[in-house]
Image (cartoon, rainbow, N blue to C red; front, side, top):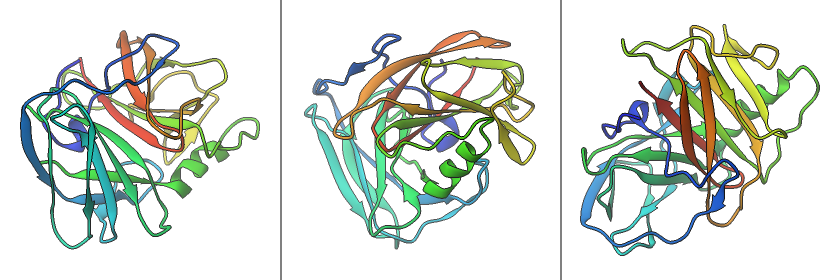
Length: 235
């Protein structure tokens, strides 16, 4: 998978722990780099339109000593955080104060770029996706969810990609202005959703999803219970 360039559209999946997934252990120490950026919020259910987010957000990432480090974004400028330099550092953003924003995970290449904007998901948007299920499927507040953007070699969304997920997970694909659980692969929008994957609410779990069809790949993703992980996959 091609590395990220430090922007949400270039975020990639994390280190995998096998198809069944494993709890994530503390990381190893590394070089310290300072990363800065702004917060945004997805305004729609399709995870495409974005707007600035002017509320407090706690941002955490893998630190240079192998532990998690954090900072509080106050909603009025740019956040700065000293993190571990890595081709794949998983950032977590949690909105404070009970807003609609749900904790969102992104993987960034802090080796390639030192600036990045983080985009929060909305809880109501996740609920909306579940409402399009063929049979009623409630969103688990303690499970993890993944939004997958598949992009072709031409930089455009890629159709015809099927996502393999745990048997008890909910899978849907963006279709038109909605989502559909009755189709089996990405449409011309190139976007898939996997919901209700078991994950710890304290800490992380690494799992590997599978992609088949017009793009064949194992897709490692880092999960956290109650959070949404957003990844972009490229050839």
